[in-house]
Image (cartoon, rainbow, N blue to C red):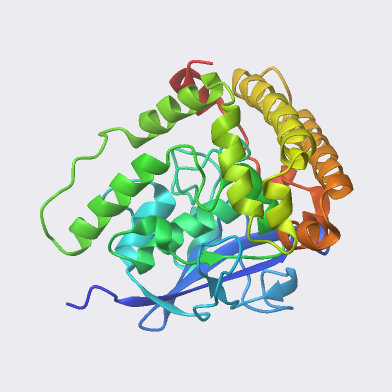
Length: 327
């Protein structure tokens, strides 16, 4: 049997019917049957369809995972359904009940249900864009962190915080993807954590306890801006330290504390989303004031709308992670 048994495409639309606040998702086609991967939200095939989304862009080009110099790889890629389902549900031996015609029946926001969370704790370790990009790992058999990504305009902002695929639990996601490939090929198993949800919790705990490493983050940020227009000079100047690293560190500290409070149940969903978004917007505005205009617009198209968290896409409860993350 051919390993690549399907074709996967991705898209995005305007969340809340607000231009530039993008919700991303993927649709997989196997022999004419469509499977939905709504990634904490919804899906749509076109404007005016039964899902009633606004400004639908589907299918869109997928891109190589490089912040600067990324190239389109087309809008449709060969994929494996089993791997896509397993990555979406973040489990081995996934359930086969995410058909587009039935997704409203099966989709919910609870981590213990048939869901599309991809091992991402929404807001804490990633958002819909990182979940979608993990599901796109179904287009590969290995080297998953070189996998093409869905790249709406707002992705540049979420990438700054979460990376391409969600930094937390990425190591477990890689092991899971390898196991799912082995299952799809009916080959030898890969050793993965028996309880992937617990593994995600442990990853969260480590992330929430980790202190900011200025040298590590400086190297990461310098790499992001070095090849942007006029960014080379910034990467080697005091602007990097005072104008970028300092606001970035302030935002990271605020978000880390709010992440802990969210998982402890000490802030409401509205408070968490509002305060994280406000802190993110402040950071972006500080960047705008110190970066050359061409550099800023490359890294943050249209200011990335200064919106990181979409409140309606947060799960109903985070209780399932409170004990696991030991916060």
